[in-house]
Image (cartoon, rainbow, N blue to C red; front, side, top):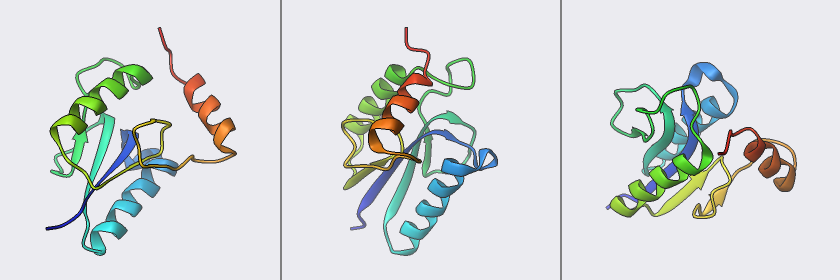
Length: 117
């Protein structure tokens, strides 16, 4: 049985470049090693079976951090993964990969980018 890996990112859109493109490259590389990879994103459009858009029904380009966290927790309670890798600071991820700077700086910068209400 293949090991399942979930990779969490805010938006599933390689046209944005940067983190989005590197997540898709990571997914391809892990799949090439025989792992079953899934991308868990708040927003995006796709027909790929391994990309799960969890907050696609919400308006706007971005989703509140806590809304995305709730959707992720629901998805993770219904699906089993061997490893959860996130480029966003979620405490339930096995691996947190900040996208630049120090961990503390990255967490603060990312959290500040959300409109938490």
